[in-house]
Length: 603
View 1 (cartoon, rainbow, N blue to C red):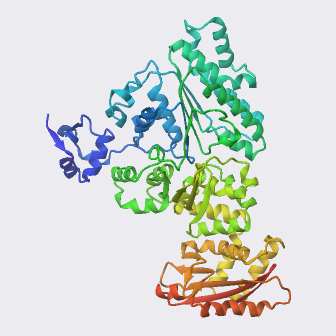
View 2: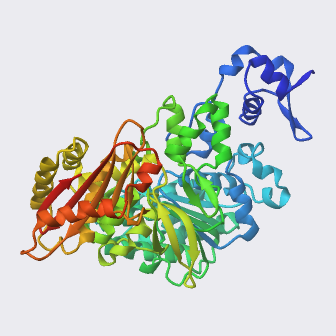
């Protein structure tokens, strides 16, 4: 049989060599094989229509078998290798939603689970199978308990418990081999039937993992692998809908029975967004290894790496879209690995490479809403700084819990980081195991989420548009009227306690201009630090400089104070950076505040 190189095939089909290599990896050429690291393709399999034959993208697919056989699959099987190299008793992976947690857990289930089917066929062309017998000898050798709580999104504890109970019952039913087991006693089979038929109490359910692992261990003669996907989804619902204590108490007992000192456990895996350690859900579990977004371990296995995105674009003939996909969906950093949002990348390519905020619609953004509701003026200003492209430095606690949103407002950055709304720009490890981090918004997609959630939840969206129209049209009187009207309707008499509050308020109101300006706050220029600068992104629009003054004194004249603010812009030469950037038209605005009153002067 005659074989062709990837270069020869690329020339025949009029595509790139790299794209041919990707088609080989995806199984598009029947009989293709590797020889000394190079792909060889049977000449008789090449036809012109192959250049158009592409596997569909796995939108919403979390079934590993289906993904690997019917869709474009990004190989994450080396996660298995990394796990078996250390083999902790229980591994917890915390990642944002839609970053591949469920797919990876199903991959682990298919790899480890002992079934009548030869499931090695799903791995023989994957990277894990090239790693040797030390790893592949584990394939298909363990009974597996698999539960995913990703869809347990109920409004009451009663509904939540009922859904969890049914999920446990279904997992018992999935192991129907226990019904006819020759090794189980009559009593043990009765216990199996009780759970499989959903005739159990809440206390019974709390012991579900422990019982099922015992039965499976006895039947197979091998300890169990336990996989719990999205364990904290019902916990977040409990926080949002006032049954937090009930769900935490249930989970504490449920995990304790299955994962703590369980002689029937080989090893376990859990995934979630948060590590709810402070609630003692994992109390006394010294066998738990947590892998957060700040840890280097497993950093490349959740989400897409740069190389994986380039290969995908190459496969679909969209190489020229790489920079756009970086701007919109890149920017995350797990450990030291640059990561793209996989859900958004897949949807972007499937949607003919038209950029949208795909991730925004995949789940609830209620955490941001609660953060805004409880934010201090300082935190609000920092949120607007983030929205304007700046970084802030903050302490990050990877074991943050939901109730801390209200009791500890400064925990919000930890929430936003682990939930995927922020990225780590720099890390400074602390002695307590947590970190000081520089954080920022990762990409354009998340900017859209912030604009929607932050501006809408503070009722500033429509007001922002009107105020920015007044700024842009250089109408100082209208701007003054709109500012005073906004403050009258939206701030309390206690809010305007210092200049920083008004600074943050104005930063937020300017944020909607982010598509036309680079918005900067408290930056060096000339002989001092301006309050806010709007650096135009196009040459044909003006730049803006704002200086604010504040007084509590009812006797002080706001007109003269606004004049001083305007004069300070000239005296301190705050326009230096704008002029050096070639901005020809510069609008200077001085604003004086007192309570809910403002005076605006323009120069």
